[in-house]
Length: 420
Image (cartoon, rainbow, N blue to C red; front, top):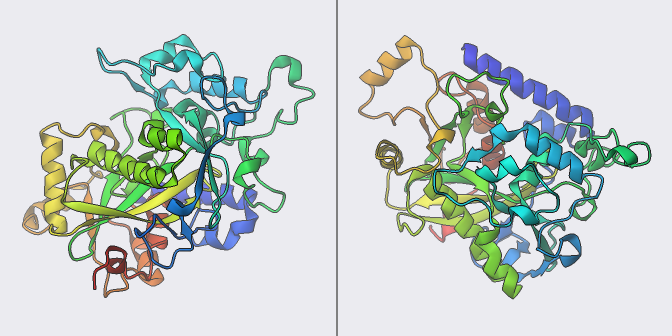
């Protein structure tokens, strides 16, 4: 139980940090739900029928006042050198480009001049959400980059250092992004008052034909690396049982929607971005007919303070969970998974390995956990708390999986897909 104890300690430390800064959410934080007030969402007919927010019915606006002539987000002038510095000092958070792979063609046109060496890394164009969601409201977006997320939401507890000539007069000097984007009562500021990148994330829970939940073990990159290296601190907790797939929405997913100011195409782009992440992390093709996806919620994280997240439910209508796990395992062995380094299997004792061998006829491969809710209502709060307390194979849930399941508790998920 040594690993499990270390992970629980990490959860406790994070919870203490959140309680210190975000007292407004104290009850949710104690309940391990580390998100701002969640909102059920649907994309037209897709998703919870009762959701008041229909993203497809909103107006899509690209906020040109918030970007430079090349279309990239313009942070507060005193924040720009801070983002540049954090990006240069945290290169281990970036993925080196493969030989012959072109980097971001817009690198020279970002809001600031970043260290030229960063051009050798994968830096995706992402989507900044600049306004809160309201029924019938406007979706305000602008193109940002992954470097902007690193310099703000991901490292939100580092004091901002403005340019030398502004350190005495800047309202940002010496304050953290978390402090700057939080109200005095601990509540997150509205998106249109925030200085951080607040780039959109996507995450999905997967269920099989019998609505059994498929969790995967999130494992930090860099086998054998020191635990204090930046690559050990992923966006999610470094290790733990995680969502089926998660990632960042890319501008290319919604470029057509932005050009045409189409909220419907923006919804389609969100779905395509989620399918891309499933493909990258599991090997199931983007156009696979083995599964379908629906959105079910939107929330903003507290750990990466204010980062927007759309939650999806992925349903394998014909496949059993064991078969889904076996397909992912086979894709991994055949090197068909592009982002294989983000998932793995938890460390096991000798007795655990023997038990797995003896029970292999019905247990999924290492690194997978099949959670079996009872009844049509799926998980209830008591069961969710129990599986979080007990963990699985001496490991606990990431806060992202816990949050995703928390938002699904007591839901008849079959109704999301029009099933009876």
